[in-house]
Image: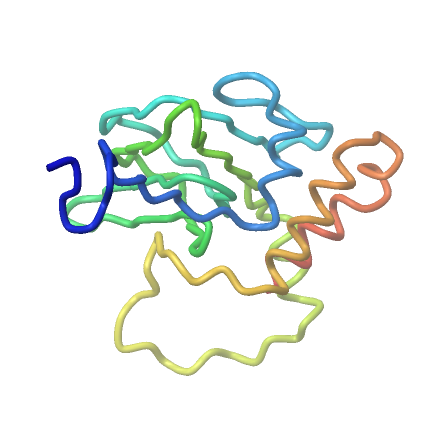
Length: 183
């Protein structure tokens, strides 16, 4: 019979589409070429990757990395950090890690990488008058992933919009990156 489990003449099950977030369109507009694409603001790059990549040794700069579509995996020692449309990655010091990209032509990985400028971070910490932190039982992690909250996603979308025009980039990009670091 052509029907198996009530699926008439179906030769394959539809594959699951990986989720995207609101940054996908903005990154796609700036990441016109395969791989790394520079932007109008130094230290901010966007990536488009249309093929799966096996784990590759990569030096991650001190950065905030947001994925709009697709999935990436970074491995440091025994820990693997999966970041995608719902989670971002923060790397505090530059670190060598194994990076794996899960992508295809139909579902490219679209990524925004914002290098963390120490001078900007220092300025932010002074401006928010942070009180001395309580003693920690453990040192804070040098790399971590976190759920992508709406306010950070909105700030990243504004950054992407400002990167389409030199005047807007000059006027707004630094402050928007500062906001992203704060969030």
